[in-house]
Length: 380
Image (tube, rainbow, N blue to C red; front, side):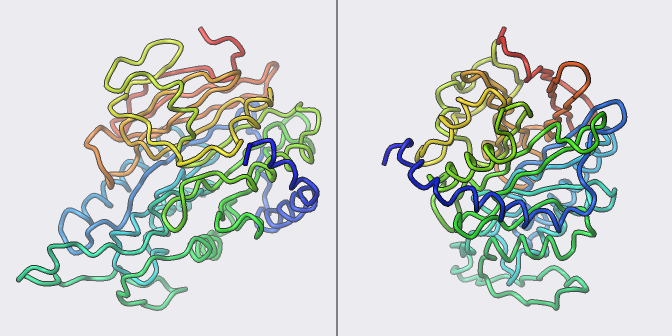
């Protein structure tokens, strides 16, 4: 099927857009809004990978270290919003009945500080447990200690199963204290779940959105790593419904890079040179398994300024593609592969005079680097 054939499904798209907006609304009692001065700052936390090897000393220790990274970034930047950009947990390494216990820990730094957030799913978040081969050696299965139960959830014991996306999202919303802006997206997009759009209202025109943020489930784990044809149609319907004249700038977030990232990527392990901007280029892009039209849909919308992904721990660059930017976040968690220093991508949006999007990397040690303007129509 060609990407343009996805448009055949547009007959039901407008109704889906209305239903999706209704799903988000009740969970957002306090609308997102540009701060005084006309700025809206977002911190991206990517690939936290909580819950690995809980039966060892190093597994819990790296979770503690991930807590520290997020605390350092939040306290230094004081963002208005946080995006958890997938792989919050390594479910295939979590021997508990409900990975929501670790998911809840991942979002707790933002919640404790009263910072609203949203989440998208990565390829590890709902994977089934993978039994370590060494557990079948003479030493046998080690003593596995499940994390303590939270008040709203009884002690689940260790059942060695993955936690479905819907369960993870539902548990997040149940314990969000009114701060989560995540949503279980339209049923017709399942098995993808984290498909929704958020409006950020203008400080100067309080009833008008000045920014739209789209969140898409890029799959992986329980189903293939892909943004589907149905999601493309849904995005187009949302865009027509919310932004018919393209007047409102748009940003897009998902976990696994599209194949377009491969096309613009600097050669792996080489220095990142202009027009790309970044400091970490230690591996090849690991893209989705197929492209079903989402990049065509985004590239033909001048209102889309940038796309942000995680997944590749050894990449943190932004590169131009058509008239928008393709950006990696920065590996935030101490879980997952790679020993590169941890940090987070910061996205600072301004609605004053001319709309602008500036971005940089904030490191765990407090330093910043890789500053880039993402709203520029010219790529120098």
